[in-house]
Image 1 (cartoon, rainbow, N blue to C red):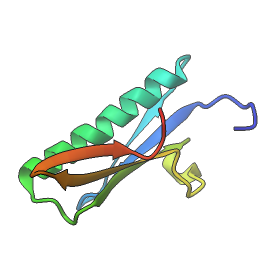
Image 2 (cartoon, helix red, strand yellow):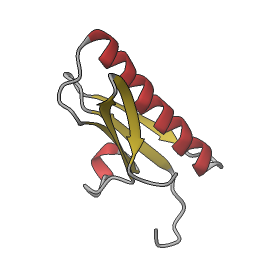
Image 3 (cartoon, rainbow, N blue to C red):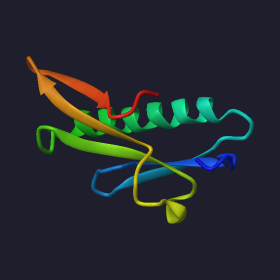
Image 4 (tube, helix red, strand yellow):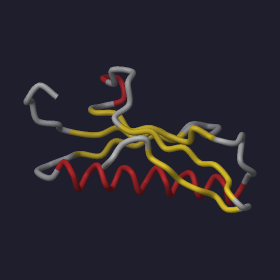
Length: 96
């Protein structure tokens, strides 16, 4: 980032229909990012309980800085779900 404060994160889950939610950072951006990450994982788990894994691996969701319409196209973090030894594994492509 260019030093400007982050005002929100936009979380998207690749389901049908797609799920999205915006998380305001208020005064704690790391906490808001953690909440957004948990929401994406929870939505993916809910989807998996109702359906089978769409493909292995499944690019389940992403988090962007800002409102959905302000997303640059490049996610801050992306969640992939895959199976290993018949168990679902949730991995984020960032270090947060």
